[in-house]
Picture 1 (cartoon, rainbow, N blue to C red):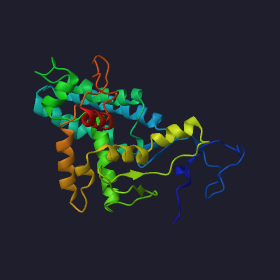
Picture 2: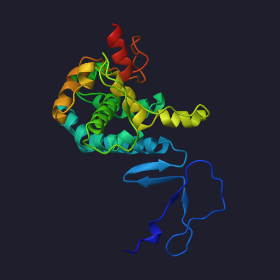
Picture 3: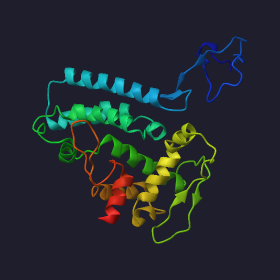
Picture 4: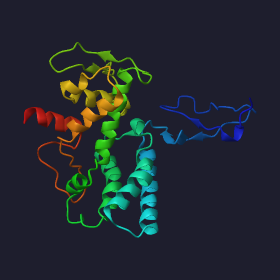
Length: 267
């Protein structure tokens, strides 16, 4: 099989120890070195972060929102929610288990996509964003991403999808089954530690471990049962994203499921 040499791109991670080294394609021509390369719809960046991808998602999603609002005149609830969930939201969430952010600024930028859209809906403009979400029976985008991380992680530990990392299961105790990962090196730089903390496995393990025992101990059941139990629990947690113009609750530090679960345990 012959490859298309014009499609080759080179992405180098980390410190470039051999700057003069060139990668050659099958024709012996040097491959262009890129700062960002798109792979299966997600931009991978040389610095190991997803800042570029998230910025691109925000820009493209806003364009899509504007197109929808200009194309459709209605501002009624059902059409507006249907348009957002079927056209805009898939673009915002594609591949989010890989790039789901932990930085407040990026979380807010993504959340404002949904906030800006649903505030155009008639009869709910006077409500706060959390009240609008509750009225429309929607999760915040942050809550949806964390929910998906939990679901995907559960599928991994149940053997429904491949596991590509060494997961260590802690001994079962009164808090139910939980997992841990090999700790990072003490000599690791702050940048490396930050990249690790933002990775799927670190986020997913923390989210799963924060759940109540009865949810964590769901084994051998089908996916729909797990989703049902998880959603019933999430409905008990406040969903109050930290966005401009809204005074955050003083009960927790963020809108993360982790913080709300800890609050629920102590309340």
